[in-house]
Image 1 (cartoon, rainbow, N blue to C red):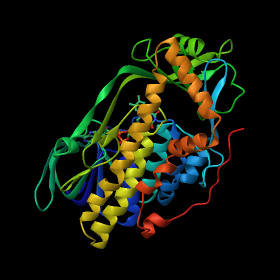
Image 2 (image 1 turned 90 degrees about the vertical axis):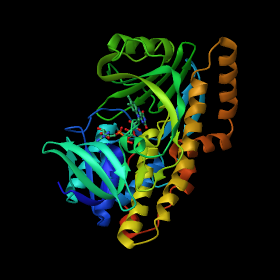
Image 3 (image 1 turned 90 degrees about the horizontal axis):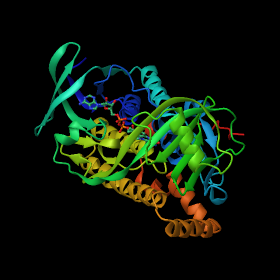
Length: 408
Ligand SMILES: Cc1cc2nc3c(=O)[nH]c(=O)nc-3n(C[C@H](O)[C@H](O)[C@H](O)COP(=O)(O)OP(=O)(O)OC[C@H]3O[C@@H](n4cnc5c(N)ncnc54)[C@H](O)[C@@H]3O)c2cc1C
C-alpha cells in the first residue's frame, strides 16, 4: 500500500466504493481503506431509486444492478383493508421509471467488482486511527496487517459511516437527535407470494409495516416498535405481519434470512468540508429508513464529490469547487431528512381519532394526481436533481442504455 496519495477515502461502504470507482475511472490518484476484512454482506438498504440510477450511469454499474434487482412501478399505502394511496413510478420523467429493489450487499458487490475491473483495490483490515490536517495536506495514522504507518494525502474523504473518524477529526458538527422508537428489519421467504406486485406500506392500529419484494424470491419487512429482541425470529416477524398486514390474509413466513433491530438518528453535518477533510453518506447525514433514502442520498453525494475532486485534483481548478460540493449536497440531505421525518411521523401516529384522521387525509390526497406525482418525484429523488449537478467531465458523462424490465 502506498503512503502518499491525492485522495484517501476512509470506508468502503457503498459511498466509499462509488467514489473510488469514479476516481479510478477519471484517473485520479487515490487510496481506499476499510477496517473490515470483507464487506458487511448485510441486506440493509433494499431500494435504489430512479435518480440514483441516473447518477450511477457514469460509473458503469447500472446494467449489472438492473440485472440483479427487481423493478417495481408501484408504491401503495394501505390501512389493513383498503388502499389509501397509490404512487405510480411508471410515469416518472426518467429512463428508470421504477424503484429498483436490490439488497445493499448486492449494490456494494457490483461497485466492488467494477472497481476491481478498472484496476482499483480496496485495502482491507486497515483502520484510520488518527487524522491531522495542516496547510499542505493530511497525515492519517493507520493500523493494518503490516502494522502502523502514516499516510499522507492531499484530501481525506470520510465515507466511514455515522460514527465517522474523519468528521470527528474535523470541525464539522453533526447536529440532530434520535427517534424514541426502534425499527425492525427482516428479509424473509414466504409460503406463497402475494398477488400484488408493489411495495406496500400498511398503517395498522398496532403500528406500521412495510412489505416489499426482493430478488431471489425474498421479501423485505420493515416495522416500527421492534419486538423480539436484537434479531427477531420467524414467530416475531409473523406476528408483525398478522397484526399489521392485510386483514385476514397476512402472508406466511417460512424462513427469516436476516433480521435486525435498530434505533434511528436524524442528524446532518453543518458543512461537508473542513479544509482538506470532506464527508459524504452516513458520515454527513442519517435519518429514518422511511422512504428508503439513506444509501441513495449517499451514492449521489459520492458521484457529485468525485466530479469536484476530479476537477480540482486532475484539472487544477479552484479548491472552492469542494465547497460547492457541500453547498449543493447539504440541501438535498436537509430535504431528505424532512421527507423521511414526515413519513415517520405519519407512521407513528397514535390514538384512534388521530389515526382515522391521518387515513382520511391520505385517502383524500391520494385522489389528487398532483399529490401522487409530487410524492413519486420526492421518493424517486428526481425532485432533488438540482442538488446533483455534475460538470460533464468525460468520466461523468458516460451513458448506458436502460435494460430494465418491470416485475410481473
Ligand atoms: C440495520 C440498518 C438498516 C438500514 N436500512 C436502510 C434502508 O432500508 N434504506 C436505506 O436507504 N438505507 C438503510 N440503511 C442505511 C444504509 O445502510 C446507509 O445509508 C449506508 O450503508 C451508508 O453508506 P456509507 O458508505 O455512507 O457508510 P457505511 O455503509 O456505514 O460504511 C462505512 C464503512 O466505513 C468503515 N469504517 C468506519 N470507520 C473506519 C475507520 N476508522 N477506518 C477504516 N474504515 C472505517 C466501516 O467498516 C464501513 O465499511 C440501513 C442501515 C442499517 C444499519
